[in-house]
Image 1 (cartoon, rainbow, N blue to C red):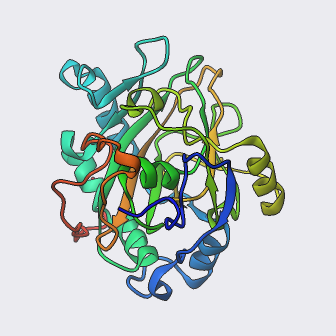
Image 2 (tube, rainbow, N blue to C red):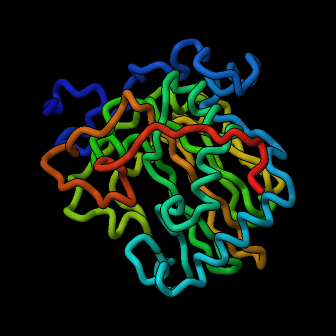
Length: 307
C-alpha cells in the first residue's frame, strides 16, 4: 500500500488541507483511441474539465428513460434496497445506484456509442462501469450536493489509483437556474484538493445523504474558482449530456422550485485503472458504489438508437 508520504494525492491525513498539482493526463493517448468528439470538443474538455453536448438524445429516448426511472422509484423491491438512498429527513428517493443492473434500458444506455465512445476516446482505453445511478431532486425538497471532487473520494475510500475516470450526466429534465442544476469550476481538474479529517468507518452511509468528509476547504475553493474565472452552470434541455473529469470540482444547489430535476449518471473508469484496496485500512465500500469484484469492458451497441 502506498504511504501518504508517497501518494501524490494524499488526503484526509493528519496534515492540513493543500492544493496539489495533477500528476495525470486529462486526455489519454492524444484522444485517438476512439472518434466520438471533434478536436475542438476534445480541447474544450481538456481545458475546462467538462463538456456539455446538447440534444444528444431525442425526446422519445428521454421519455423512455424517464419512464424507466419512474418505474424504479415506484418499485418497492428496489426502493427498500441499500442501493436506494432517500433525502435527509424524508422518504423521498434521492438516488438509486447500480441502475444498469436493475434495468435493461439503463444497461443499454451505458453502452450507447454516444456515451461510451466519448469515455473511450478521453480515457484512451477500454472502459467499465465504476458506478451508475439515477439522481432525483424532487420539487420543493431536493437537497443540495456540496462542492466535491469525485476522485478524492474514489481515491481514498475506493482505492482508485489515478485520474483516469469520468462521469456523464444524462439530463432527463430541463435544467435551468431554478431547479438546482449542476455547477462546475472550470480548470479545477488540474489541481487536487487534499482534504482534512479522518474518514469514519462506513462513511458512505452518511455521505450519500450529506457529505461531511472529503469536502474541500473554503479557501481552496475560492482560489480554484478565481483561477478558473468563476463557476459554470449546466443549464440545458433534457436529452443533453454533461461529461466531466473525475477530479473536476462540482456541486449543486437545493431545489426549492416546484419543478423536479432528474438525471442518470454513468461513471466510466479505464480498464487500466482498476481499484486497489482503500486507503488507511478502510473497508471497501459496497459493490453498488464502487465496482471491484465483477466487471468487464463495455461493448458499444451496434445501433445509434436507444429506443
